[in-house]
Image 1 (cartoon, one colour):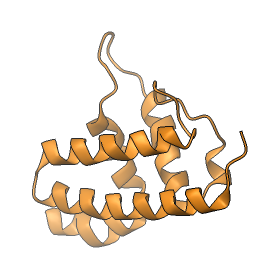
Image 2 (cartoon, rainbow, N blue to C red):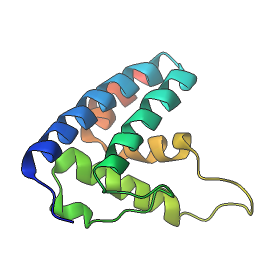
Image 3 (cartoon, rainbow, N blue to C red):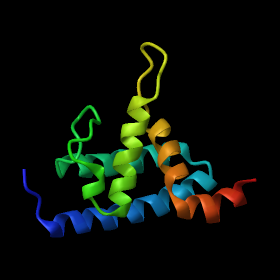
Image 4 (cartoon, one colour):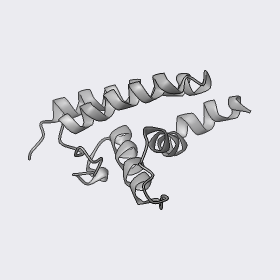
Length: 114
């Protein structure tokens, strides 16, 4: 399915804004709000046919803009990590990987947490 550039640019902006919100919520340890914001973002990514309902990535992440690519790569990494049997992949697992992959979080916010 061919995507138009404009909706993907809007999605990239939404991902950047959501990441900023998630970083601040992480600093405030507001995990329920983090999960809610992240779930809404994943629904938008799914609506653009970049992932399916099982969080499988449907496009090549490198073909996307920077923040979208990081998010899709984080989803792939989270899905590939071994998990105990019957343990579901959670938003929190994906978020941890995504935040660690993000240079802004690593350089500016992570040092403040210690």
